[in-house]
Structure formats: C-alpha cells, structure tokens
Amino acid sequence: MNKQAVLGEGMLMIYRLILVAFIALIVLGLAAVFYDYDINVRNVEASIFTKKAVDCLVEEGKVNLSRFDEQEDSFMEVCGYSSSDRIYIEARFDEKVLRQGDAGLVWIKELFDIGNHDEIRKYKPGYFRTRLPVRNADELNIFVIVKNEA
Amino acid sequence: MEKRGMSLMWEILIHLILIVLIFGLFFFASVGSVGSGQVKRQVLEKQLALMIDSAEHGMVFVVNRVNRNGEIRDIAIKDSEVHVYIEGKPSEGYPIYTKHDVYVEQEGEGLRDKFLIKVE
Image 1 (cartoon, rainbow over the protein chains, first blue to last red):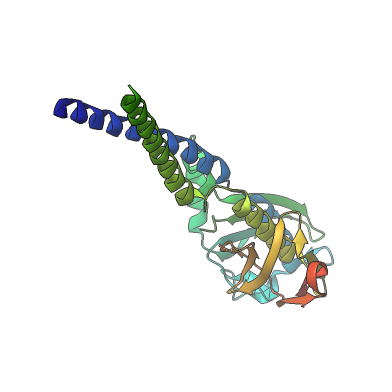
Image 2: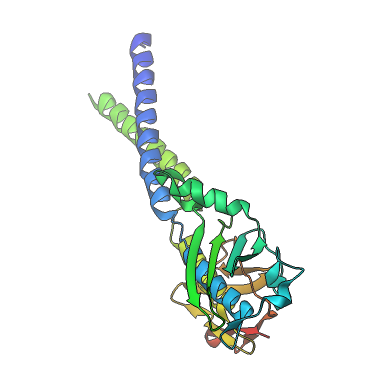
C-alpha cells in the first residue's frame, strides 16, 4: 500500500469535509438570520398608553390636577394602573409636570435619536407625543416612551 | 481495473454519507430557530397584547384555535404577560399594561375550539 497516497487521500478528505461544513453553515446561518424577525409594536403601544393617560387626566374636556397632588411621580396609579419600569409617561399642563415610570428612558431615547444605530435598532424604545387643547385654557402635553420588552 | 472502479465507488459513497451527515447535523441544530413558527407566535402575542392594552371593561376577544398563524395549543396570561403556545414551540410572552383583570377561557370542541379573552 502506498502510504503517501493514503495520507494524501486523507488530507483531501479532510479538506472536502471542511468545505462542506462551511457551506452548510452559511446556508443554514443565512436562513436562521432571515427567519429571526423582530416585530416592533412599541410605537403603537406608546400611542395606546397616551390615550390611557389622557382618559386619566381629562374629565369632560377639562384637566383636573387636584386629584394628583401627592402623586406627581406616579399619577397613573390614581386611575388604577400599576407602575411599570418598561413605560414612562410624562404629562405637562400649566407648568405642572406629572410623571409615571422610569425617567431614564428619556435618556435612552435621546441616545437612539443621535446618529445611526442600525445594529441595535431592534432595541429602540417606542415613542408617541401629543398636544391636546383643553377647555380650562392651556394645552395638555403628553409623551410616552416604551422600552424594549427583553 | 475493476478493483480500482470498486474502490472509487466506495470512496464516492463514503463522501456522500459524510456530506449528508454534516448537513443533517447543521440542519437539526438550526431547525429550532429557522422557520416561520416563531414569527407566527410573535405576531399572535403582540396582536393580543395590543388588543388587551386598548380594551375597555366588558370586552371579549375570540381567537380560533385553528388560526392562519398556526394551530394554537394554549393562550395564557402569566405575570402581566400574554403567552401563546403554537405547535409545540416555546413562548417568550409579551407584556400587557392594563388596569382591568384579564381571563382566558376555552370554548367548543375539536377544530371549532376557541379561546375567549375576557377583560373585566
């Protein structure tokens, strides 16, 4: 038996196996990336929570802030909503500010607004802002930020 | 000459078997993440979460067991998250934010089975 020939054959076999494994990795890796799709509904959630905040603050077209005198940092709890570290709601009316949730989400949102972050886009917080005219003079400003659920 | 032919045939056969084994190995390793099952599950969970978030007291949502997003094995509300289980796949859940109580009930038999999501 030609030992050199057998050795050469073995080397060739290893090379072919590595090539096949590499091709399999690329094909199935691409398929996995293609199918691993993240659906982002955080902006829609933010608009829904904005409506909840408006319903909480406005009664018959007027804003009544006296109900929230001692709960300016958790105003949604007055309306029966529990606190959540995933959501930040801020309402401004007549120089008064009411908040609910983690204000640090504002900073995270601002970070995503600066520059291009395509690689981490799936972690971008959802955002919705609205200004509503109300009967008792000034307008009501509300914005909501919803953090990534992971 | 015949011996050489036989040897070549064996060689090709062994190569083919090894190629099939390697592809099979990679395929079964990635079959969990490749496929539309997780996307369908994600779609259902997020749709239900948004509906529950925007629901008012007294609303009921009906979800058919046999759905265009797959056959739903179970829907559950756990720790303020909605979980949908499709065709044996695990569920990651999606958070809900509501002041109402949310319950899931089943109704019907077999393919006509439905899930009723009640907001009270």
